[in-house]
Length: 211
Image (cartoon, rainbow, N blue to C red; front, side, top):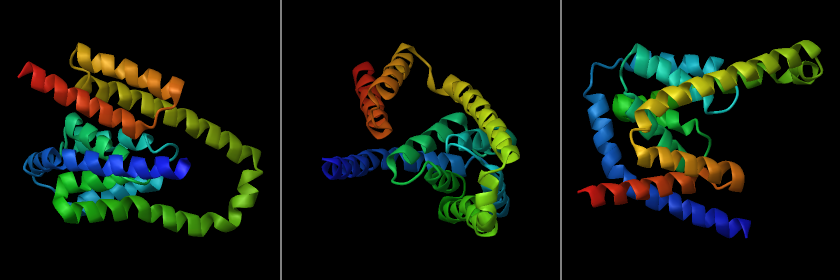
């Protein structure tokens, strides 16, 4: 049951990536040609994000948009959304989106530096704080601090969802897909990879019909 479903999902992801890769290569080329990119600055951006990021992996999107879309203008909102779609299909946490974002901005060196930058602080912090974890868990002050951070994380996710939504919701079809995906995800707990694939297929069908 669960094993078969996992294998099917893995096959689904590979097939979806096979369909997406040609278009993603074009996205990467356009991003890399959009301006001068400092690999050192790219590494520092992801090192900073990895150091301060807390909560759901989707909070990552708020940081990525602030640093790479608004500040450096290395990416557009649409390119960031493409990276999120890739992160949904690849195995592992949403943080793998950082690898593809690094690739978009700086090709393979950018992918390596972005991945190293975002994960390095976690390894260091875990090694340093591990002896204190039992005491931190029992502290009322720490509990209150984490509650506050959770609320702030929710606010960040809501804000970046609204901002990226302006780039993604462009017509009645995309709005309908949003509503349908929300219902399927919340009510029926459909895996997000299936939803992303279904949205992509419907988008391709819509383009072919319009053409």
